[in-house]
Length: 424
Ligand code: HAM
Image: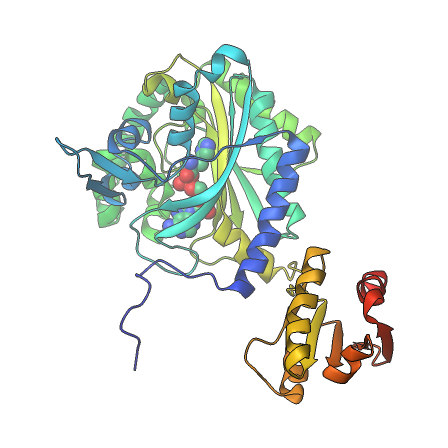
């Protein structure tokens, strides 16, 4: 019989064993960000719906189809939205706190949940966790390169080898407008070859047609015009310099003219890290430059660049690479008290171990000695400390080494010192 209540479709529970793997992953992210000098940002889970509509773009799938939006209880009610991504919120916070007044360059990162109403499948959930960075204030290609290199270093530090970095430029808005018109004209000549979905997309966002993985679309757009032919000198020079910096760092990448990204705010550089072991949902992370977003949401014109990774997908890829160390919640000591007085002593001693920084536990179920030993084994305890009422009266306890299997009689007053000295 299935339980009456289950987590909603696309939402998952993380049980403690899995949480250990997440802590490992989050530790890698924190360590990377320490080395790169990014400060952690913690944003609200909800923002005004309008922020995403303006920031991410009304025509995007994320805004038009995938947002969890609802009216709050205000009078009049306000439409608010569970964040589908964190860049808009980061830009909002940057403007709200006038960060640009005091520092020329802002380096922020965040880790946290985002929500999109998508069809769940492997690697795609309705609540997922993103790790992102936002580097705000620099128009230079060096900033793009730093962000991309941080992504490369993250992937490498997780032991993921089977991936590809795809790079493109989307030009500045006026360049993209000209390209969009040319692309639309081209797509119109291919109408009878395109999928139904692409025909629909053509109307709202023709660039997304290039993104389609459907065979007929890929074939129909093979000789589509390229944005590179619509770029003015400055955008071209920017793109070339980003590539030069990646070459200089020895980072392999492919320039992919069909990489367009699903959010409207990008200008110039766009990139994606593709996991080659991931199946259909193969974007490990992606990002790019977004020089217009901050002004778009009411702040001063400010250049910025960033990325977002799907932590859930990084986890899948790191596991596939066999890179995640065996995680065990390490119990150092299990304290066994046999007899009424000894039970009190076991609780006090367990607490004393804990206060001394040693992971310790004792029985809370009134179990027999044999069952307690079994529990100590199941918990992988390194030591078991055992005493009965008589031993306690004599001021002694036994310390059993569960790995070496030797047993030693120890004065109670020495117990902490003996275990602490043997702590592996
Ligand atoms: P995005 O490409 O929409 O970019 O999402 C970033 C990453 O989140 C994706 O590459 C993917 O790994 C993961 N992701 C997206 N949707 C799901 C889902 N339903 N389930 C699991 N993982 C998912 C952004 O969100 C931008 N804010 C990135 C950025 C930051 N650009 C500049 N700064």
